[in-house]
Length: 110
Length: 136
Image 1 (tube, rainbow over the protein chains, first blue to last red):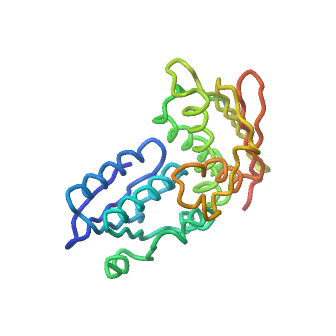
Image 2: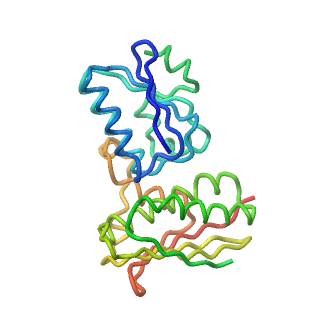
């Protein structure tokens, strides 16, 4: 499991590879917060290579969403598979996040 | 098929346990969703609770996992050395507007939604028992 960050224009794209769970959520949080501190405002988290997310992972996404918004930034999520969509629907977090079917659509939505 | 595992109170061990149990469920032809979502997420939550809240990540305290799986149902018991908790009191509606933006509190909710039953009792430790009927 790892997180790959790259810039696409003025957007920071984060690929979550493997699981986003209690054991690695802080790593994702810190990486995104570091970029936010450097002045980045637009973030896209892509889950196309993600297995599953637990409650800690969902909690980190909620926390990051708040912190990014507080800094005047925006967060988008993309490429949730059916299992992950179910998780977001069960917890109603699909109503809290802007979720795109593809990375391209997410990038266009900023 | 029954098996017992024991891990230290360290969240880095969670993925390995989840992999072993999910593989067993796949061998008994549980549905793809059960193998890739219900079992991994619910078991991760139970293990994280046991490690973080039950054993407070104390070195030397172990978490036991008992897994009994067949073509009918999966029964998982996660045992920690904590004092336990009241399931009903701790289970909050994380979908309510006031809770939706909370960072924590979704673990028990997910276990309850992804398993058929979730029980907690004391028996030589604090036991959380998860049961899931097999779907094709």
